[in-house]
Length: 67
Image (cartoon, rainbow, N blue to C red):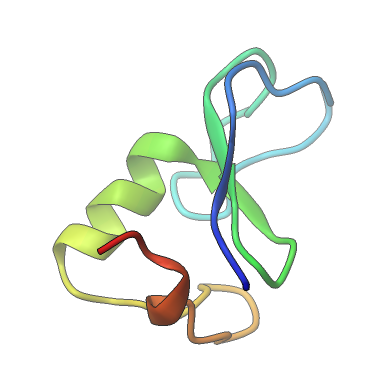
C-alpha cells in the first residue's frame, strides 16, 4: 500500500520545498509515494484545497491519504 511518510527533522541542508521555495533543513517534511518531499505544512495546505496531485510530477496521491 502506498502511503505518505512524515519526517520530523529533514537532514539535507541544500534542498528547498518547491511549494514555498524555502529551505527544508531541520523542518518537518512529508514524502509522497512518488518520493517527492515537501514541508508538512505546505502539503497540508495543498490537501486542504483538495488538490491531491504532486506539484512536481502530478502523481495522484489521494489513495495514500488516511481515511
